[in-house]
Image (tube, rainbow, N blue to C red; front, side):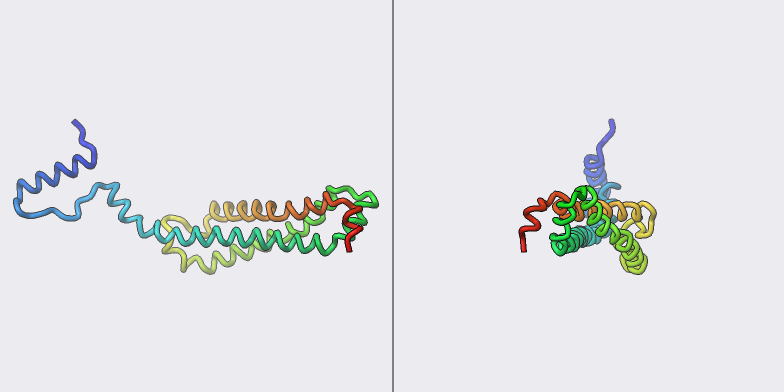
Length: 171
């Protein structure tokens, strides 16, 4: 009959107590428990990094969104004139989406340079993950691109769908 890890551990402790009465075994763990103890330090170091990464993504989203919103608000009158003269909304959307999207490659390159510089310091925080691993780079690039697209889309769409009469009537 096969015993599970917990019952095997209890059986081992009973056998130890019968062979050496009065002594207590210490530091007896199953392999799964040993792995958990060993990897706990790596997992605890990962949590602050994940928190900082989430904050960085949120700050990036707000920053890109704010920049494109600023560009749209600064050119509201021009947008209204263009739309009143027959410019297609898709072209207005493309103009602002393009101006925001030009920032993405620069942000990606700067982020990778910063990752390369800080990688030796962060290396001890991760277990079997390298900051310059192709999968990490691809994941960071995809996350940056999706974040940028989401941040750019709202103000660019607002500009494209602006009502020319309302936009031109504002001071």
